[in-house]
Every structure is written in structure tokens, then in C-alpha cells.
Length: 74
Image (cartoon, rainbow, N blue to C red; front, side, top):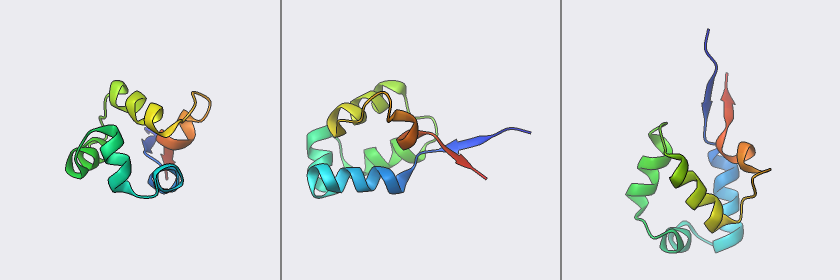
């Protein structure tokens, strides 16, 4: 039996709105399109480099990383 994990989209969305007010402003700061962002997040194989870029733009600390990007799926 394997354990599945996914991005905590709800927490990530809350952080985006809190920091940037909208996803559009966040994506502009990140320098990618909505489609590219959704692909990265939904792919399930997002690179660590992409995750670090997202953390830097959203001021997500190393300690908070797991809360945003590692959510256990039942």
C-alpha cells in the first residue's frame, strides 16, 4: 500500500490572496501564465525548483513548506 500526497490547494489559494490579492497578481510576480501554473500544480510531478520559486514569491518558509505542498490523500 502506498501513501498519496498532493498540493494543499486551499491553503495555497489563501496564501496567494493574502499576499497578492488575486491569482493574476501572483502569477505576474511569479512570471508565468495561469495555464503553466495549473499544469505545474496539477501534474503531480512539479519540480523542486518550481516549488522553491513559488515559496520565494509567497514568502513560505522552509518550516511551512510541508503544510502547503504535502497533503496526505485518504
